[in-house]
Image 1: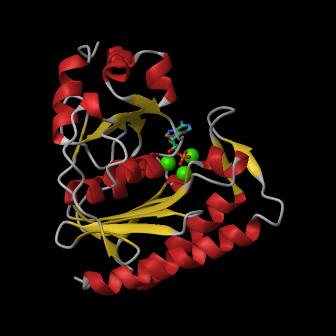
Image 2 (image 1 turned 90 degrees about the vertical axis):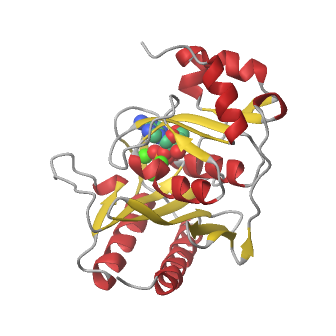
Length: 260
Ligand code: 2AM
Ligand code: CA
Ligand code: CA
Ligand code: CA
């Protein structure tokens, strides 16, 4: 098993290279394609950053398995044993295209199903959040303190647009009970807000690469990361996800309607 301090310096250097590539490409024309629908985008930069990470991982860790959003193939029989890297090259692609802001690059590393390292890079703020269970969480070189255990009434919540407009499991009740709702359109950026204590909870339907890194970082700060009902997330399955302080999780679970 490689020492994780070596892995940390490698991953940070790759993410810094990816950031430079992204920043340089703002000057050029970025190709954009739709995937499942008009709001589900992928760009030439998503693909280039993912290919770059995969190449680096394969060169440095030839036995590791790699799952990336843009190269994910359903038919591959992924196993959680050994070292598994889960990549979201650009999280918040719509923001990347429309705003050139509020997007993140994310990598999560699991060893035999246990989260070892998460990295979420807020590219435009140049803030790299990284860490894991043994070392805690850092923003660049500064250690993050555990956020206050706010209850729902005293905290902002971030709820994905589909959940809120469709009132999924009566989540509008949660919105009304909270201090207010914010929606940013990037799971990575919204994980960061919970890590920093800027909001008490984040609720969304997420795929493995959307939560792989954030789950590791949030749990290292005593935050709760589960399904809305409090079940453990399967690292290879999509699911509804609640990231929250312990108090906000309790409050939210009292308000949500049973799953149908
Ligand atoms: P993405 O940009 O990497 O696709 C808001 O859209 C957030 O939800 C983003 O973090 C986005 O990640 C994620 N997301 C998950 N599934 C999505 C989908 N089908 N369409 C758009 N965004 C999705
Ligand atoms: Ca996407
Ligand atoms: Ca994503
Ligand atoms: Ca993505």
